[in-house]
Length: 107
Image 1 (cartoon, rainbow, N blue to C red):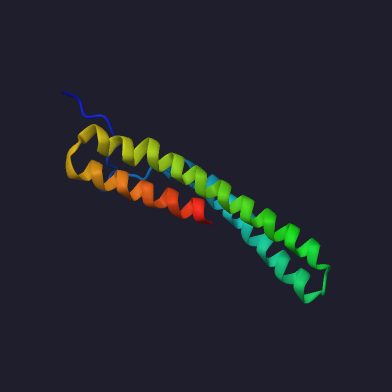
Image 2: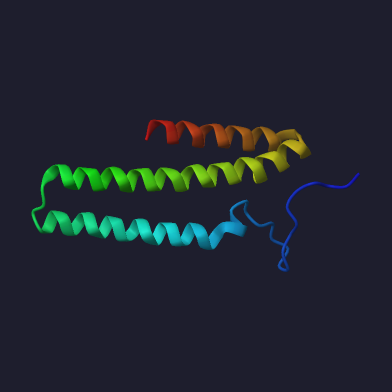
């Protein structure tokens, strides 16, 4: 039977599900970092409250998008691999994903 799942790299490490999109996530997070600096500057410059809140909403939305992308990668890679393998690891990965979803829903 051929094992389906992530292949170890040269160091024997199994890559994370997001590894192939790592640079895209890094770029998005740098952009969000810039947005947060912009919000701080708006406060320093005594900008209108609603304008600041609008920018904070945009930052939250951008972070949520990154989080959902990472969750999707995790489910499609780590969780699906663990479920294919079965056993205790599958149960741990499913519980872990469920807890992560619960945290995202609360935020």
